[in-house]
Length: 163
Image (cartoon, rainbow, N blue to C red; front, side, top):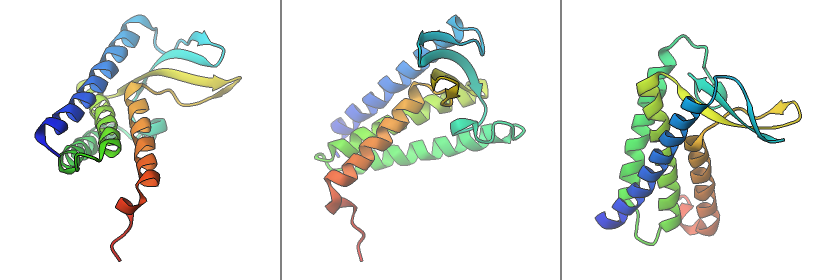
């Protein structure tokens, strides 16, 4: 991919990082920790701190997980930048997916490095059944993964193994 096109996708990732950090700062300054603010009957804003990974995996592991997940996120982010720079110009859907995943990974990496935890504040539920709280970075990673799966369905010839 040409440098200019790579820069555009890195710009998308930067917008996601900025939006993620802005919303986390806003949530941290306006919400009381652990106190739900009902927005809709199925949607709350609830400030929570996640020291683990997705769904608070390893949250109670004793502290080593902070650096493990930070290093893992940093390595994945470098791999995503290299992958993005090597795409062909017509691989726009895959480029978008990588940019979203990169933006989300760096957004959460920033929290981990500076705070020691990831700020979560979006909470959806049905009656007493709660989905784990998440943030804009998590949403971007999920959207990016969805776009990558969509790319695999729309462009199966690119994803066939070389037997």
